[in-house]
Image (cartoon, rainbow over all chains, first blue to last red; front, side, top):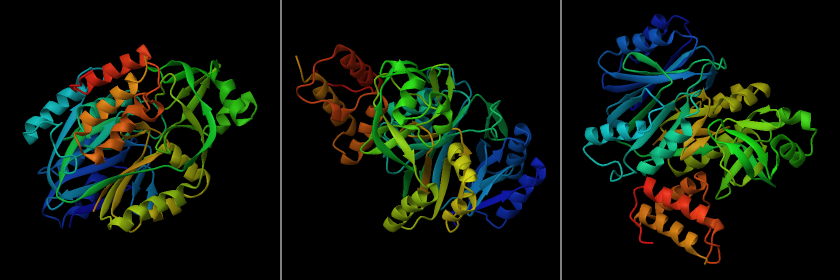
Length: 368
Length: 68
């Protein structure tokens, strides 16, 4: 046993947590429990109940906009993965409870260094992996993941916490408590090999936009190519200026790195400007993307990884915009089936992290 | 003057990766996400002070020691 997974759709925090515990009850070498819960549970209750039910273990997790478990895409549920001591040699979890604090990541990293008795810059990036769960309403993801990347070569992967599309408040959970406007960084030392899959379903068209007037704090682009942003975007696609938002999901923009897009998804128009779900920099060349088939492309990327070595378990941080597209195309069942044979948990995120903060992507931590 | 940007980018990648080829691609991607695409600069690229300033900030943030 390396991981055990379970879910509950019981709407009571207490009963749902007990149900999860019962499903894990035959395992006696558990070390750590990761869980993703709908924001429709009371955050303080679900955090406390999960910790109460696993009192000898550490529990951590976050709120979602939909949950994933092998074979299923769920709503209003809780999904959990318990890691056994034959998968995880050691772990350390840090809560960043003030995302405005400039040195929040640096302080967390100092605690990791104390725990592992090694400098983050000197740790073997093949032996450690980090998880990020960052408040999806904080607009802080770029600063956090960028600083992580400055301080270490250890890969960190994760997602932005959700609140079932209410866009009011999200939470992370650790050790029985719920925190808002916060993030969790977890540094795992697995006993097994691992990898990160980043999958998105887009091809880059030979059409570019360069942001020339922006506000990076609010993720707003006022002008592309010195033209009002909405006009530049709609002209590029060849559509009426009033129809811009209808094309956002199908035609986001991508920062290309080695022919692979790091997707920047438009969220809304504000007068002539466009607001994005993640940051774009001035003079950063962005390609117009065109969406494909999420189920086929995810399956292809998983099959590729599986061909190298058999994946034993995985954690999937799946963008809510992908979930909405899957729902619109009636493909949620097919998407769930892609992970049917692999012990998996995940959630629908407000953004994904791997090397940077991205959108309309699945970032997946796989264990071999 | 030209070529200083390419030189700085190469130095950043070399020092950060410390001879490990597996780290080259993620390091390049991190630079691209910071707004510096290593493949866009060559020996003829003009020494743009704004981009050089950005690279010096990156060197400081990454805590690298680079001979300029």
